[in-house]
Amino acid sequence: MHSFRNQRLFEPVDISVANLMAALGRYQGRQELFRHQAPQVLDVLRRTAIVESTEASNRIEGIVVPPHRLEALMSQEAPQTRSESEIAGYRDVLARVHTGQIAMPLTPESIRALHAELYAFLPGEGGEWKDHDNVIRQRLPDGRDVVRFVPLPAVETPQAMAELCAGLTELWNGEAVDQLLVANAFVLDFLCIHPFRDGNGRVGRLLTLVLLYAAGYEVGRYISLERIIEHTKETYYEALWRSSQRWETGKHDLTPWHQYSLSVLIYAYREFEARVGELASAPGAKREAVLQVFGTLKAGQTFSIAEMERLCPTVSRATVRRVLEELREQRAVECLGTGRAAQWRKC
Image 1 (cartoon, rainbow, N blue to C red):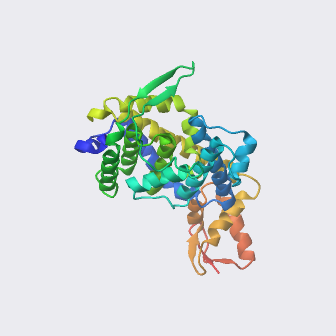
Image 2: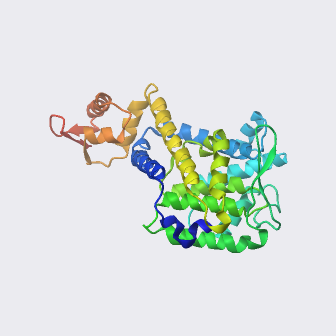
Image 3: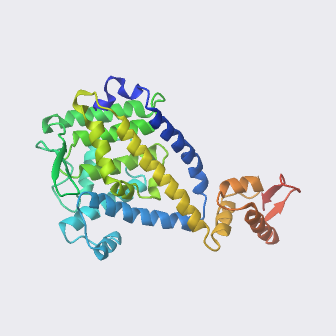
């Protein structure tokens, strides 16, 4: 909530944050092009991301199960232990986030419902604000357990969450503040409030996906952001610690948190484009990519080879032309002219 007070989000951002946002704008612009790849490419990435996200987000909190049990849980097998119950809960909520069943607007009630679903296999443990004060701890590599932050007292939590959600709603559909900055600030404030007795980190990561999808950044469907966070866990905690200093007075610095969160997203987009390129280079994949795009066209619709290239960014012009020639032999398409600017029409 403190990030939304006194027009904090209207302040100019650090140049490093501005540069990261500009880079993300370019990645987002190419996002739709890559989504036109052959469906099997995206399906492979999507299935892998769901497993990796479920495993990594829980492992960050020390919740682990043997690989064979994780595989069984991801195949919808019923959980048998507490750890398995928490993993199964995350699995189900993540699936609902990915399919748009948990989406904006975010309210205190919807966030409590999300937490309740996270603990669906542990009845009575989810869906309620914390009833006693808590602290954010971190276990260091040398084994020491340190207090990183003292969150808001339990008695202030309901009002704080109501204020935070109201601030999000007020800024989200406006044009004064970029939605990425609003999303980052919301998640930081959520983690600083630490509204639940347990599960705050996992809920925070799920809310991150909800906000990113609402803002049009969908890379988390194909590349596990939770895995990237796990692999950069020390940097994650450091950024959270730096941006939470003086949070209770509203004089905290959002820059470290923005830098970290945006960098995770850029890393994910780079990996996404690289993985799509690798999978699309498999035998027959590029031909399938062209056929997939062609299949989306309506009968009688015209297009150029250049337009087809833009929709198939990993496919060469020679391959596009070769597939179109195959389709012309099958009388599925006809060429309406000659030269590079010639139009084609789907029959």
